[in-house]
Length: 288
Image (tube, rainbow, N blue to C red; front, side):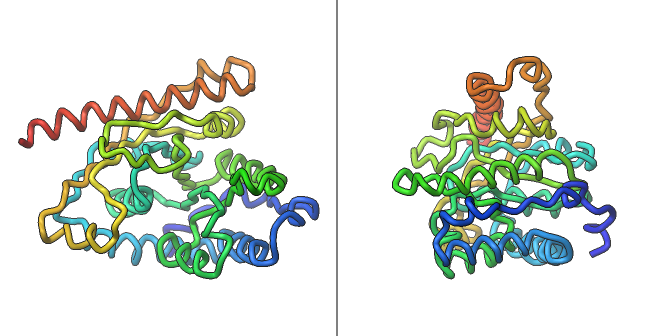
């Protein structure tokens, strides 16, 4: 595990924890789920789960996808400086997008990695079964949680903490990689080159944290796990992951930190993802 502890992440020196008002809006089960996952993303526990991600999680994903996997531009991740966090911004079509992307980075680069996947709290933080899925699928990396459901408007008080925590994680930290979907939810369209409108949240985080930002286009993954696994041996769709070059956002940083700028950043990043999609379309045409 030495490769994961070469340097203590700087963000851990500025620990955040929700105040009493923010915690009070959570139910007892939600509060336990948060406290458990929060602890698993700190110190030695984070190092241990990162070891599991690298040597166990990435292995089983490789076994389940090796006949289908096609990766392009991995050098763009391998070569980005590890001293500053990397925010991967990707289209969102399946439950497994970021798990597969992270497994590729673990297996095809030598960089130190500490993973975080901001997630909608529904299910993953609202029941013990959700906690188990977070452990089994993400090794507790689905953190921090956001309670964004319209019928739970009072929970947005807690989201103030989650946003501050995400900005903290994205601001500094050796080897930190954050997976983020600007679309905000899964796109259920059958067209892999169709995208939902970008949400401004990713722009708000980037404007304040200034991480390295890399666009990612993902195609070929489905939402039915048994079918996805069997497809590796029965001729399922090719899985394609395209990593773009780091995005220069300096021009946006000169603008005011407001919603309009956040949306412009999000739209710009979705355009970068769409550009990778065009390259994928051309590549797929050449295969036929």
